[in-house]
Length: 273
Image (cartoon, rainbow, N blue to C red; front, top):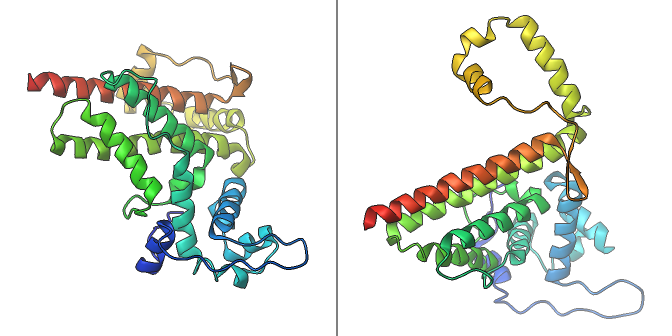
């Protein structure tokens, strides 16, 4: 499911994102109910999406989490479209805006650290991957993330036109890698069958039904023959948590792919000299 941001009233949405309007007064009174605020509503909505996915998001569901009706929320947030914009921008505040531990001249190390942070951010909030990049939210935290990447890329010394295209390359690459990790984590629960069961059943059927597979697809078969993958394990131990094989493969693909992209930046820099 793809969701497009920026569908609410432009002025009201941007006013809320940038906190440029005076919030409605909070009303105290007897009873245990907490006072509402835009931040409280957004926090409850983010928690809901993190736990149950984008499909569970509604003003009513968020209101239930806060012990209020959906109508009570509309005083603070006009509707679900504006709420989605606020959620999207709010979680981006988690991303670092500087990498002081890296040598300022070591752009490669800084970009590697940045890519790793953005990957893990999307894995923590997989619903963010459903928000299309075709139309940005235009919020302060989204802009801070963009500003951080541009700052890191400027250290490469490449011209502005190239940097713009690198931004448009790196963000989709990291998001795509995060999508692969997120999907690997969700597949078993969503389908009711483990990765081992799925591959065992379909591999056996494929070999039986397509005995000339190697002849029909020589490039694919040749690649596996030249660099065979290890036997499919149920999980691989990394640190203290078992990591399913598909997720480990997605992470390794991210690591190798990022290295190739950074090699390309190195080559572009060399061409300038």
